[in-house]
Structures are given as C-alpha cells and as structure tokens.
Amino acid sequence: MGMKVSIIGPGKVGMVLAYTLMMKGVAREIVLIGSDRARAEGEAMDLMHAQAFLQVPVTVRAGELADTAGSAVVAVCASVPSPPGMTDRNVIAEGNAALFRSVLPQVAKAAPDTRLVIVSNPVDAMTWLALEVTGFPPARVMGSGTLVDSIRFRELLSPLIRIHPDDLRAYILGEHGEHQFPAMSVASAGGELIDDTPERRALCEQAKNLGIEVFRKKGNTCYAIGLAAAYIVESILLDEKRTIPLSVKIDGFAGVSGVCLSVPVVVGANGVERYLHPALNPLETSQFRKAAMAVRSVIDRLQHPPA
Ligand SMILES: NC(=O)c1ccc[n+]([C@@H]2O[C@H](COP(=O)([O-])OP(=O)(O)OC[C@H]3O[C@@H](n4cnc5c(N)ncnc54)[C@H](O)[C@@H]3O)[C@@H](O)[C@H]2O)c1
Image (cartoon, rainbow, N blue to C red):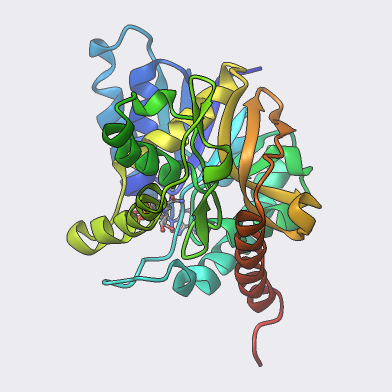
C-alpha cells in the first residue's frame, strides 16, 4: 500500500496531525486540502522547509479534493468554526454535515479505495454520515471516537495504581461526548482486573470534562487529538493491528445497531480488521445503549432537519 495521506482541513488539529506524521517518518506524501488554498500552501511550504532536519524525507503539498487519489488514508479534520465557549459538540453538527455532504462525494470519487479517519465533531454522528455519503464499507470508515478520552483516563488512572498508562488496558467507550463511560468491568493490567472503585469511575467524569476544559481555556484542543489521529493513521499505514477504541458502525453489539459509537477495534492496513466485544456488565450495557440513543437523535436531526 502506498504511503500517501491526505488531510482535509489543515487547521489546528489537521496540522498537528501533518506535523506528527512528518516527524514520525511514516507517511511519504502528505496532501493538505483546505477551504483556503493559499493558507494550505503556506502550511505545506513551512513543513517542506523543515525537511533538512528529517531522516525520512516527506513530500508535503497543498491540493484539491481530486488530489486525494491514491491516498492510503484520508483524514477529515475540516470543520465549521466552533462557537466560543462551546460545551456541546453537537451544536456544530448541522454545519459539519453540510460540509461533509459537499466534500466527501468528491473524495469517494477520487479515492474509492481509501480508508477514512474522521476527526471532525460531533465525531460519532459525522462518522455515520461519512459512511452514508461515501457508501464505503464500514471497515474503511472510522472516527477517532473515545481514543483521546481513553488516553486521558489512563493518564489519570496511572498514578493511582502506579502502572505506566500505556500498560493499562482500560477503555472509555460509547459516545465522544456526554454519554461516554469507563468499561471498568473489563479494565486490566498485567492480566489482573483493575478493581472497579467509585474513585476510579469518577476519573472518567474528570477525563470527560478535560477536553471541554482545555477548549474553554485555549479555545481549541489540538495536540492530544492530533497525536491520537496520527496513531490511528500509523496503525493503518504500517499494518500494526493495534487495538484502539474508535467510533465504528455498530452492528448488534449490546443490542445496538444503526449508529456509530466507540468500541475497541483492531486497526491494520485494511482499516477496521476486527471488532472486539468486551463483556460489559449490565450497568455498562445500559450506558452503551444510552450513548446510542443520544447519537441516534443527532443522526436523525441530520437526516430529517426540522422544516
Ligand atoms: N474527535 C476529537 O476528539 C476532536 C478533538 C478536537 C477537535 N476535534 C474537531 O476537529 C475539527 C477541527 O478542529 P480545529 O481546531 O482544527 O479547527 P480549525 O478551525 O482550526 O480548522 C478547520 C479547518 O477546516 C477547513 N475547512 C473548512 N471548510 C472546509 C471545506 N469545505 N473543505 C476543506 N476544508 C475546510 C478550514 O480551512 C480549516 O483548515 C473540529 O470539528 C473539532 O471539533 C475533534
């Protein structure tokens, strides 16, 4: 598979993704596609001027949607602006739905075999819409989902149980938003279950609010999500088969269908190569169903806008 990555929306998140892919030497060609061509060209030039510092040269250029042709991955970070002080990601759903409906058919035409990594919010509804608009098979469309939330959760859990965050198999699942929850009943480290205590469960609430808190303080979040997106792209390009909580089309898990939500999936060259089915307890199962209803209502709103 080629090592070409297209990034639609070279804004704050898209550019951290581009920079990270360049620094890691994973992608060999990066195309930046924005609504402002001059701006995308400026970003591409800036990254090209760093090439002499790299071990692996990467070609970075600005392009149009047709230039996604031949991309192994197309990452979608394009977005309408978020209103200042935004506390609910769903307020940009209509705006980003219109954006997706204008942009993604052209991607599907130019790069019919690519894998789509959706970052734009509200990411679960947008992943669903991307599936609908492109008609791509579910294995080739995934949203960053609760990956950042899970990473924040592990970061908070780590000092409490004194184990490196990367060694904690602890997942936040469900919606990237209000209806996310920690799958504590299946959280483990070193083959031992991590005890489900109210204190640990409360860390999920804390992790959930951290994204919004950063947004309140600096007006956006870009580094954690940019690296999270790069981690997904790398797992595809290098066929790493990492287990990652991502927003994917749910087909019967916990009695839920017809919606995208985060569950742990295995990501490799083909995209989502395997769906894992953690044995959630009754509380977690009902939380997963609540998340499904919340995301479903956003999808319904996008499919049947009020007259
Ligand atoms: N999933 C997550 O965990 C997560 C975390 C942080 C941010 N986000 C989301 O990522 C998105 C981007 O955030 P940001 O801070 O980088 O925003 P930003 O405003 O800096 O960037 C948006 C980019 O989209 C581009 N764009 C707008 N319309 C376009 C179009 N029609 N075609 C191509 N490009 C277009 C703009 O040119 C700009 O480069 C937002 O929706 C944000 O909510 C998601």
